Length: 224
Image: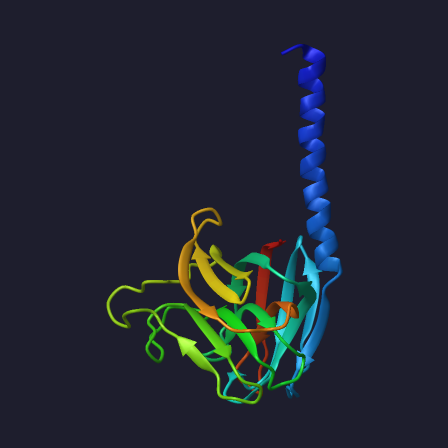
């Protein structure tokens, strides 16, 4: 290839990389930040080191109503959201951070929540760090989809700072993926829930401890 063409190709490649970085930064700056429910401790979020630090209080994301901090964008139609969770403080055994697709900003809204815990300690029907949860009816009880087995080595372990998480919508099918490198993704599960085309999508953190907040640091956030 002639030197001029090679140089032009190099410039286009570099420009593309810069554009991608800018697009990601703009997406983070466009995020809205909201406490859902009425947590005793007010949550917050800030962009830090090209990632997002979320501090969340709240009793839980579970049962018939939720308390947590939510950083979100309105998304229409299909989407593919992924992030690397670099760290998650353990305010409680059931402290949670993850990716959420939510119909409303009310505390009892229907939603999908693919989340992780601070460690791989045994929990109800789960000995790993990832879990897929949902509320199918407004004001209804939440449910969870657990790994196939709850003993032995975890099937879906967290491994901070390289706990990657991904939530993808195709039509009304929501699929959760996990990874340790952001390249090789494993399907955790898929679930079908008829949500409106336009919903709230983003990152959620609950401490599961009304008297203490939890901090999660999300890096490598990509909205598609």
